[in-house]
Image (cartoon, rainbow, N blue to C red; front, top):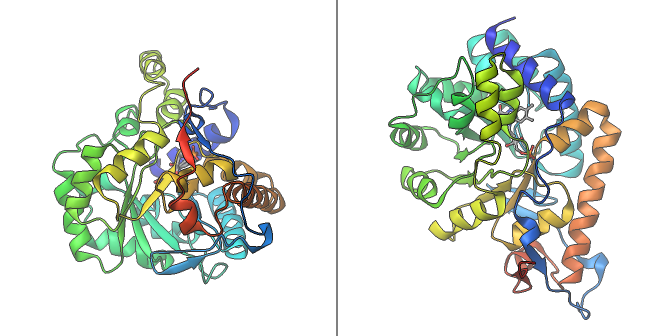
Length: 344
Ligand SMILES: Cc1cc2nc3c(=O)[nH]c(=O)nc-3n(C[C@H](O)[C@H](O)[C@H](O)COP(=O)(O)O)c2cc1C
């Protein structure tokens, strides 16, 4: 097993076995309330959850965040995620394809187009790899490997910093991202992995020409915590525990990115767990919401468990829209009926 695959195996194991639950309400959505409309003036059954995003129609504004690949268990999980994504008409990102760029025999652990011919599918690589020998060729290879509609480059400086083998040279990265954006023939989106995109980072990414941003804020799975669990060094573990609140919570990251552009396609993720939070994400300016570990946990149980979870999210989203009289996702996005709750 390569060191990349071993790391993936450990990440998966820790994510599924350890208690990584964030402090309550850490994603920031609890600070917002919808203003209930007793007269929504619409029929619940007439609510339309579909959206257009990156040239495709999704049945609801939802993405399974990039999670796994590179190991056999990852292949099984990606295939469950793909089947459910196809069935429910939602977007899917695969986990970082670096293991398969380095060992092409692993490509099959990411390849799911046979099961999901219609979905919006994103390839994935760590942006920092652009400072470690990766360039257009590897980005193209990742996209072609899975017949993706776009590439997601992830920014994970804190995760790398807490990894003993981390790649921590993030200098000049905005420029390197700009080069890929101008050369790759599919849209390039940039995401964090759970510490959030600030207004300043968003401005740089928009300047670099990204086609979309996943604000990926804190309040959900913390990579600082995962790397803390993985480390065998007591010092690293101790420092990681001191950083457990680091990051911009998802609701704030969303507002920060939107403050820089009302137009940039925007995904909200990080600690989103239910349909009501998906609704809040959209009402606060996102085009889609992304969910990671909660999807992974269900998929590792069974396809049926994942499907039941999807249904729960869909019902929650629909009822939230009903309660504010939003007939479609555009109306939800423009709703005046969301407000910051008064602090206790
Ligand atoms: C096991 C695991 C592996 C992940 N691998 C990747 C990855 O390769 N690339 C990436 O962009 N994000 C990766 N993520 C981060 C997720 O996409 C997501 O941003 C993060 O889990 C926070 O969202 P959540 O609170 O909904 O879990 C991974 C998450 C988990 C749990």
